[in-house]
Image (tube, rainbow over the protein chains, first blue to last red):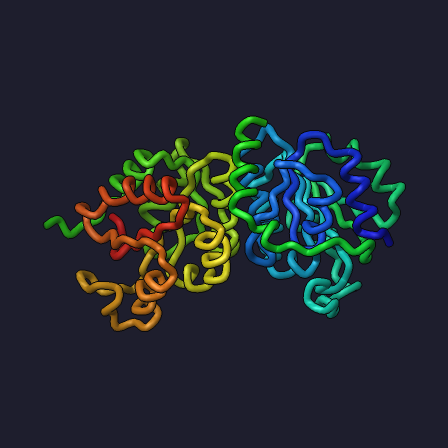
Length: 188
Length: 168
């Protein structure tokens, strides 16, 4: 099991110019760990992160798009696995921060916690590559390769809560930051 | 007044509006003469979704990538997508352009006066949400499409184009 913020710090070290779509807790942490105008946190509704990312990936096939999804979120939009696999964007890396709970909503366990195989679901939906990591050093070692491979790629990150980061939903959904993202993407 | 609605005129109007990506979940009212020809049309890319709210997010992502898109769905899917519609399209100020089939609407009857409850509530809900909407029921209505799409992108706000009869 990895601390989520440690896991994200590893990703930040490997990040170059990728778009990163982040949701909920991972988003609050990511904007501090890897600040960038190419961070997309304007997801708006639970479960929709990967679908926003699909739009970005189809709209900008020249840019790699990484999603930092949550297990509670993905369970709310499981059909997106099939939609993404069917659209088959080669530039999409769908990372799942699997902690087994609705962390923002009182840390109640998600249905099927510890029993559902998200990699199994993604594989059978038709993702090109599927990975699972529970050790930071394995994640670190594999990331350079994963960020170059053809997708859609699904990565299940077995995580638990790490350091506490401030919550700022207004920042996550800010139109001003969304417009900065659009400008940055246009020039990227 | 011409009481028919021609699918090829709608397709031409979508092209005039700069739309080349259609995000769709088949609707019995529009699938035969609108979605199927679009699927065969090399000028369009179709992204099929499993549930309509995915489409609201996909269109929003496409907007940030500077791509125009149409979400082609049935009104039941619109009703099922209220949270995404309010949080992502309206509050998030994303120009999500929806073409919504009003399956079962009586010809010539305004949607709000339909005998069907599900249809009758669509327009009042859109009004409460502050979402611009237009009834597309005859050939005369088709010319509303491109200006409505232009306004949506100019104002960064969603629009609903309500298809009131099966296109031929």
